[in-house]
Amino acid sequence: MEKAMNSNYVVSCQQCGLNALCIPHSLSQSEMDELDTEVKRGKPLQRGQYVFEESEKFSALYAVRSGEIKTFSIDDEGEEHLIGFFLPGEILGLDAIETGNYVNSARALETTAICEIPYNQVESLSSRIPNLQSYMYRILSKEIRED
Image (tube, helix red, strand yellow):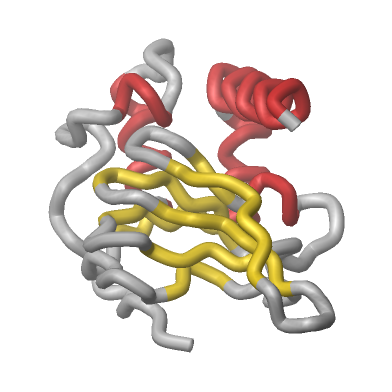
């Protein structure tokens, strides 16, 4: 499995053209700054690189900034089964919160930039920033509805 490096890049959440899609509009400047310090922006993934693999320990949510991610599972016969596609502004990894392990694999279909949001920080920030907590509830509800 080849993964992207976790070196940080400079583009902040406020400067990102997708911030209206993946973070709530109602965060104050200080709340946005607090969230921004926790988001990791690594080198872009190249086609075929994994974001995570099935059964790997859950540690973070991922927001797609550019490119496309495919999620899939492998059955007992080694056949790949498509779960879904994630495009810019969408967040993946939500289905791993309950079990503590990723329930499928996620791989870049093309050069793809992602933001890694450590889940322990999401929990901590959500308890201090009510608008962020509300946003997390909305994206979890959307995930349930779409499933």
